[in-house]
Length: 69
Image (cartoon, rainbow, N blue to C red; front, side):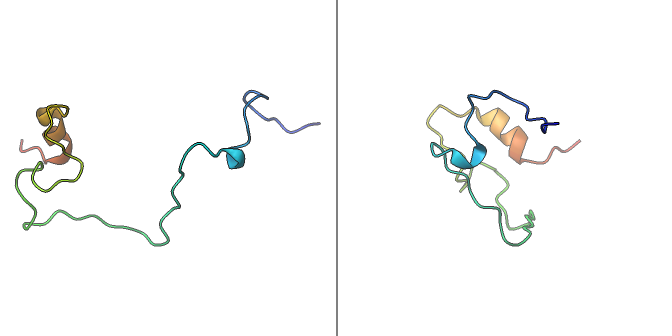
């Protein structure tokens, strides 16, 4: 009995893909902590935010800031 190989036969093997960059997994665990030294506004000094009118600021802040309920 042949092993079950799902997907199309026309798809290349994952290791043969060369049209994308696949980053290596980190060698050590990572921990991200928010401190009282972080800016209150998540758009300040944030490399993921570009204020070019392309980013919805409200959605961005909802994602990065804590909700105070």
